[in-house]
Image (cartoon, rainbow, N blue to C red; front, side, top):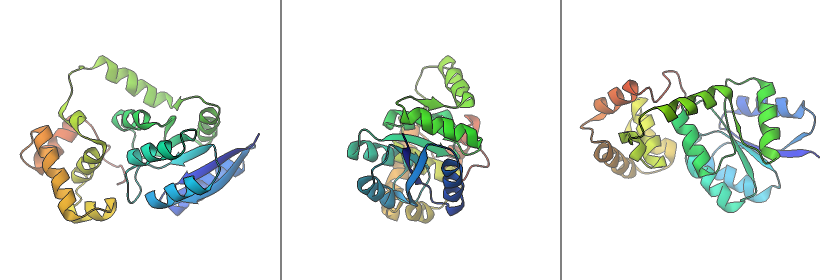
Length: 216
C-alpha cells in the first residue's frame, strides 16, 4: 500500500529534498506541500494523507501549536517532526502535543524513510541520539526548572529572544502584534523570575537549551 505524505517546511530546498528522497523510495507518494502554518492546515483539511512531515519553525503558528491543531482536525493523521532543534525539550513538547516521531534534519535519508514508514504503521519513532537525551534527562533532577513553566508559545518567544531577535522580528515571524510579544515577554520574565534579556540568555547557555547554530 502506498503511503501518502504531506510535507510542511518554509524552505523550498528542504521540501525539494524531502520529496526527492520519498519519491525515490518505493511505497511513498507526496500528496502535497505547505510553506507556513496557514497553508499546512489548509493542506491537511483538503488532502487525504496518512503522514505529515512537519518543520517546527515556520512562519505563523509554532510547530507545537500546529501539531495540536492538526490532531484536532484529523486525529488519525500521523505527524513526524523534522527539525533543526535537537534539544529533548522540543521533542518532549512535540510528543505531548500529539506527534508520533521526531527527527533532526541532519539525519540520513534512509532514516527519514524508516521514520515515515514506522509512524505510518502506527508506531513511534525517535532517533537513537534523541532517545539517549531523553534517557539522560530522566536521571536529572525532577524539580521543575524555570523554563519548564513556560507555555509552548512562551517557550518559542524565549528561544527567539535568546537568538537575538527583536520584539518586532518576533512579532513578524509569529504573525502577532508587538504588544502581544511584549505580553509574552513579560510573562516569561515573571515565570522564570528573570530581570532582563541578558539573564535569559545566560540561563539558556547555562542549561544548554538551544544549539548555538540552530536556525530560527
